[in-house]
Length: 93
Ligand SMILES: *[C@@H]1O[C@H](CO)[C@@H](O)[C@H](O)[C@H]1NC(C)=O
Ligand SMILES: *[C@@H]1O[C@H](CO)[C@@H](O)[C@H](O)[C@H]1NC(C)=O
Ligand SMILES: *[C@@H]1O[C@H](CO)[C@@H](O)[C@H](O)[C@H]1NC(C)=O
Image 1: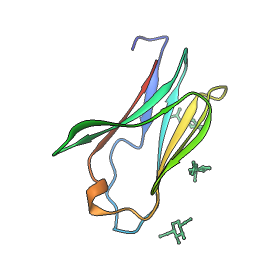
Image 2: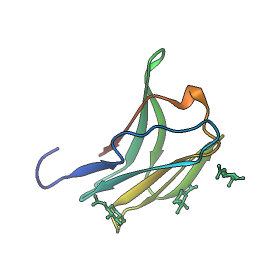
Image 3: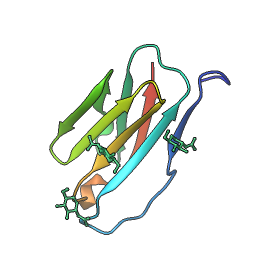
């Protein structure tokens, strides 16, 4: 990532109650190909959650969407559970 290809994640950290719905946001200034959301899991290491080029995807309690024009993507977690804790990362290709 350099100055021209900026990627920003919001919020940087967050504490929740079990059952909360969460929205993580990733803003980027430039996208060539796809955006990927990862989770860094204490047990499993880095796990790819979604690869997204357009529109939205769902997987169980997780949902994601991207708006390439406006330069942002959401990762939503519905009804959060203790196993959702970890570090979430987004990467733009
Ligand atoms: C989370 O979202 C689900 C589905 O949209 C909804 O049924 C539930 O009430 C929400 N939970 C909270 C804590 O807002
Ligand atoms: C991220 O993008 C959203 C939607 O375009 C915008 O409302 C928000 O201010 C942006 N956040 C930052 C830190 O740039
Ligand atoms: C995720 O949450 C945001 C903000 O609440 C909402 O605008 C968006 O439609 C949701 N996306 C998905 C895939 O659930």
